[in-house]
Image 1 (tube, rainbow, N blue to C red):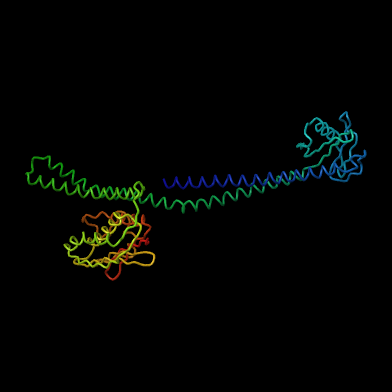
Image 2: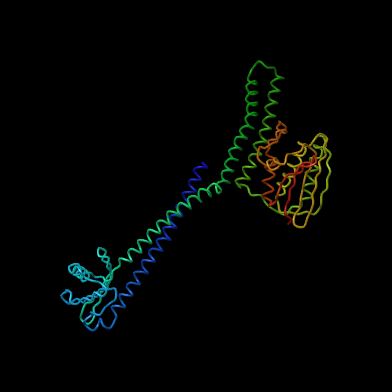
Length: 398
């Protein structure tokens, strides 16, 4: 798919380039041709307008034109060849005959490379001929130059398009790879609980087990089903966020009560795991956000701290207010997180190797928090030093 997309991108670019080059060179060529033609006709008209043209004989013409006077019988009466030497009288007569039979005042006789202009004056017909060989050669040279420039420009833009296609398609490629990885990881996460459900269901249908054992099978199915329900809900949450199908209602939210309520709700659970919680919250901190989703962000960070904090490790919750923004963070004592892994923590289904255990975590919580914070026009990041792992959330003040 990515390869086809790159090829399509290059083809569209090159089609655009070809159309633009053809348009530019065509306009240049046509404009040059028209200018040369108009200049030639203007000079011919000036030669035709000279007073001596009205006086009869025209044998003193030294301009680069052939001036011919034709009688009523459409035969040549007088010729002033000027700087030209006429060696083919039959060709001249053929040209005059063709010009006199034409309805056009001026035109080009291609086979002789001549342009003519005819007018009637003083009961006589006058024809002025001009050799346009140099004009044709100039136009042909321009055409060749345009073709050469067009070919080199096409090749140059082709190389640029190939290089640009890799850069332009990179975000799409990354999104595609992330989607494939997401599907792969989701399938992996669902495979084990589905296998457990299928196995326990088969065992339930067997008569070889006691009622007590069958009750255990039912309990296993219920536990794994709840496990899957949480996973599916989180996946749907991310899918909705990606698609933008559900628009959150944004309003002014006081962060202090949101953090306080979530911390109070989870304090008992964290205390039961042996974690001491300290709060340092600044009041009257108002941002534009969705209250429910902001509460989910706080809950995800506290739940994450509780899962990965060291035994009896302390958890600190802080909310600071600055001039244009506020910063909320959750810090816990725990195993250091390598610097190279900090950004990966917000990827979907990502878990550190040391944390790959069935503890109810799917590696989606931080991804959901990341998505929500982005919706609030904020930033979220992680830091780890001196045995303290800290997750920060920065939001603009209202």
